[in-house]
Image 1 (cartoon, rainbow, N blue to C red):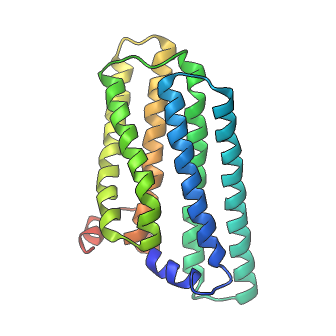
Image 2 (cartoon, rainbow, N blue to C red; image 1 turned 90 degrees about the vertical axis):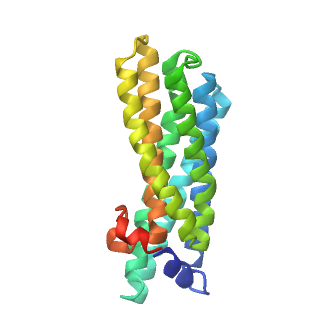
Amino acid sequence: MIREFISIFQSGDPLQGVSERFTRMLTLTGDMTIAAGRIYFDGNVDPVALQSIRTQDVEVNRLERRIRKLIVAHLSIRHDSVDLPYCLFLLSLAKDVERLGDYAKNLSELAEIGGGPPPDDECVAELQAIRASVEQMYRDAPTATSRGDAGLAVRHIQEGRQLTKRCEALMRRIAEADYAPRTAVALALGARYYKRFSGHLLNIFSSVVMPLHKLDFFDEDEIEKK
């Protein structure tokens, strides 16, 4: 689906700027998530870093609203049924990216709950490994979407599905561990937010290989064709 979208909106169409704004949103939320992870795992409540993430979140929200406005205006003026599926497609993806920004902001604020850096144990080591995988997904997402790289997308879809299961298993381990209440809450929410990062990034990667009506669903038969 993403390749058809690129061919329409990067070929002199008045909506060409939409794809550029979408890529900007994706880059911003990636930067926010990496910065939020640094704050969360350092346990350092840095007011300047927190404010930077909040400022970036405002920009992400502004970009989403601009994308929505451009698409609505485009459809109202042109009444083009050919463009309609691609416009719906991008509205869905823009909402996924906007939610990524919200979760990055939420993750950065957990340092205020945890009361310091997380403990050096197996649960935190697993969460660090999940963090590394999510951040790599972010780094590869602009390439996969801008180039329509099906191979890269499929690899991250498969990895992302495993990350979701790992986050769920980790939350159960945290619940059963003997943590202080503040630490348990911060770790469980951290695992939850990384699960949501993975889930929304999966939706973005699925746009490369799935048709519009199956966006957000990871059909094994469809993926195996790529």
